[in-house]
Length: 263
Image (cartoon, rainbow, N blue to C red; front, side, top):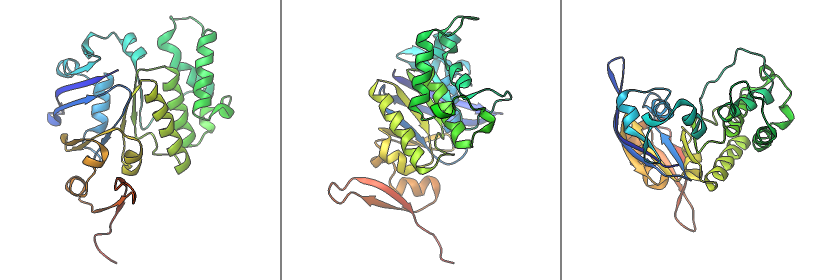
């Protein structure tokens, strides 16, 4: 599912938040939103999902050329899933119960899950490597394990668009890579993945396109190697990064921050 954002501008408490953002997020790709805290990454995800909305944003965001305003709540839930950075639950649900909640948009009210629904839930548990936790209470999990539970619930939703806010923030290195391998597999099925992320090296490894934001404005967009340059990073983050290039191809494959002063 293609996403088009046309001249999106928003405010928060009377102050500009996003300023004239226009982007084309192609189906079957990983699109990374990169920028400092408070630059508007999470706000953009919430507007794409419809969680935050104004009359302007509902007409400025299009899913497969349909304005967001034309989607019913149920229809949107069948098309799009979001995983927020900080998710909590006040109830002592099992992991399997939480993942099964992802099927809610696909069943009628008071209807029980059918064989296909249970199969989708099992696949989501397997895909995120949490099947062995399925009977455990969510309160008994580490923050990294819970992060995978929320992703599994989103996968059980079978979305065409997956929005993720810092999906690897509580994960160790192995699971960071595994999560992005999952996301890569999803794009091969035509799913559009939009991720707000701080890790530039994961962005270089996996993202197809990047939008670099600063103070709600779009600084640059394009291929990761073209956007995450020393000049752009220093302009936005005020940090000097040393590029690491593939010795055979010359492609940018990593970035290392440099100390500005010695102790």
